[in-house]
Amino acid sequence: MQASSLEIAPPEILARSNKIKRIQTISLTLLFLAGIINFLDRGSLSIANQTIRMDLGLSATQFGFLLSAFSLSYGISQLPSGLLLDRFGPRVILGGGLLFWSCMQALAGSVSSFSHFIMLRIGLGIGEAPFMPSGVKVVNDWFNIKKRGLPMGIFNSSTTLGQAFAPPILVALMLAFGWRMMFLIIGIAGMVIALCWYAWYRNRDQLSLNAEETAYLDQGSKPLASNRLSFREWGSLFKRRTVWGMILGFSGVNYTGWLYLAWLPGYLQAERGLSLANTGWVAAIPFLFGSLGMLVNGLVADKLANLGYSLLKSRKTLICFGLICSAACTLLVIQSSSTAMAVSFISLALFFIHFAGTSAWGLVQIIAPSRMVASLSSIQNFGSFICASFAPIVTGWVLDTTGSFNWALVVCSCVTFAGALSYFFIVKNPIEAADAA
Image 1: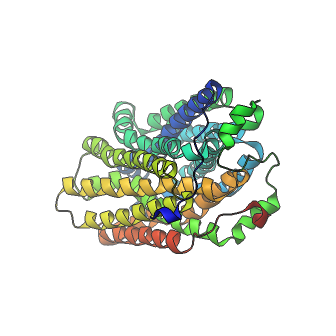
Image 2: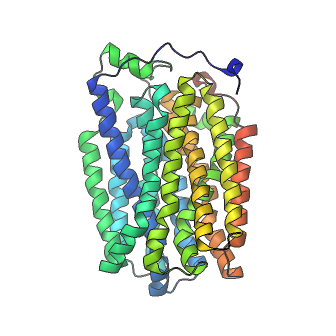
Image 3: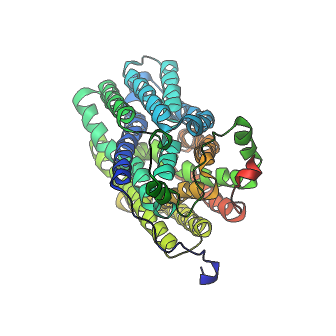
């Protein structure tokens, strides 16, 4: 990337007040804890894969549908959650969603049939829908545009840390109390975080800021609009080429992430012959690499921004690089001759996919006006999760049909590479408020 493509950077970012620092710390801490709980909830079904299938008499294909019930409801629920977030803010919408999804998770410990489980997984998806758009909006509202890379990396890393913590923690809970009590315990933990979020977080328009604080938050970007997003403006986003490019591109991120989240424990047990206890620790390693990828991306993105590189071009470059590398690593999993080699390539695949995904969330904050950030985030997540919902079903069908995960990994690699092409060729221009109105 040459200096001629650089934007003119502001002379120096203004200093933060102690009040802004406190708000940023509280917001990120609570989002981080909610992210860990979020992915403990999502990972619980995958960890209990073999046990639940035996108890309820489910085939791999049925279990794939059970996993996809969550992702489909989660994806569809993105649409209203983004509009609600842009209109009412994260305090109520995320707080209510977190409380609801935690109740669904706790009730999952009482299931007695496949249909009952399906309904609770649908409820879990509806409740979790506001989480990612809320985090993007919170970082957008409370951090300067040149300083959002690292907070997005920290926020996003909570999701893979949750995935990393999930195997050892959930396996320990299962072995000690059984899978039903495991669901109940982590559901109660989520309820506690929900109450803390509502008690301690405030939307930006709920607090009085002085001129210096407002100047710090708005420096380098357009000031936060006070008028709420209309339904007409929200609907017009679907007419934008850039929006569809982001949906298709992010499908590569979510398909890969959801395949490994849903089936990694099953892969290690069925394909590599690991025991349940060993799976808990080994499965944590790739997700720790995913967290590292998020943090590294945040540091790199902020560094490029501070050097004056175009925010749009630098984020797109990081996204495409991460997606292509992840696709290559997933293909190499198939060629692995040992468990250690397979886990190494899966770890690299998750490092690069979450490296790309963090910049993809950052791109939303750059490419759209602030008042549309939550809506665009949720639309991107909606479309990509509709695609990602096929990952568990396709993988389950391939496993039942061939007895191996190999072709499922080939499909995953192709979808990831297609995501890179979408970002490169389709995502071109920023979304202006006047054009979207």
